[in-house]
Length: 372
Image 1: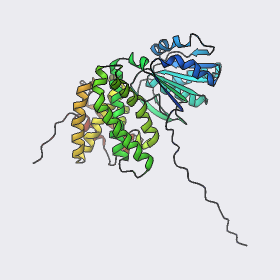
Image 2 (image 1 turned 60 degrees about the vertical axis):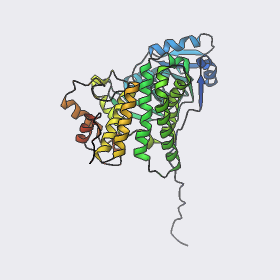
Image 3 (image 1 turned 180 degrees about the horizontal axis):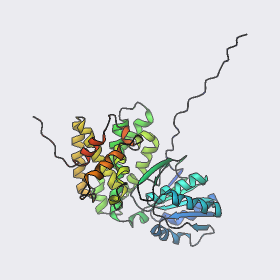
Image 4 (image 1 turned 135 degrees about the vertical axis):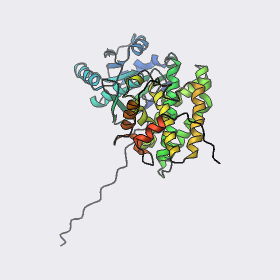
């Protein structure tokens, strides 16, 4: 009898994909249906919202048998806020978490639900990000700088896109959302454009479609809120952008544009600019880095984007970000943070140094150099 042990090969498990919310409800005035859908999870809901978002949804809970608990209004997803909310969950024992607001509030609500193993409903009140869709939360420190992100086990259980609610947000928020969403193409195509994996190929092609929709419809959408074009751009920024990251996985989410955003949050001068505004500028920085590698297509893409940004009001330079007085030492710090070992910038197919990032940051509007 042989002494050799026969070991059965274990099945290999590919990365688990959290692609989309279990249910997506869209329409005008659909927040009136929120209590009905929440009641399927139990009798008690904890609402996590900013002050304005709390006021916007309070009227919809007037005629419901649900017990509604409001957490203190928050503005940022920080470890301190998360600790406070975990205590509230332990004390109140809600059946479901409801996140209402912008990206940071929604990231907070999703992460609390994840840590507490509770159902989560998301209600975006702006078109600024796809946070209401995704299985990801970004956490910031007390000074507002990006600290780390957390991959969640699933997308939200239910997501409400109420166009009436989103239409009340400042126009600037949707413009910012366009900047965040259009990054999907420029980041996924450079990191995963040559992938042979079916799901990644699908995500990259969806990112191209997303870009084209935004190029074609953004100007009209910004000019005419509530129009068909406006609604399609909201869907593109809030929903389709999230679906691309879900289908493609981590490699189709963020590369250099978001790495630049994350680093810029370490400058207090940028805290008045929105997430998508910094990401949009980061796309231009990424394209400059590609140009440094001799990529002429990147030059053409950058100038196409510059024209688009000027048309809809996205920043094209450090000055547009309010950093006209930034010092060389501060820029060197940002370039160094962008290139930290765990940075998303290393998903680029070439090596990048802090000095190259610095050169790209100060030359986002450089003209096309004629070749002889």
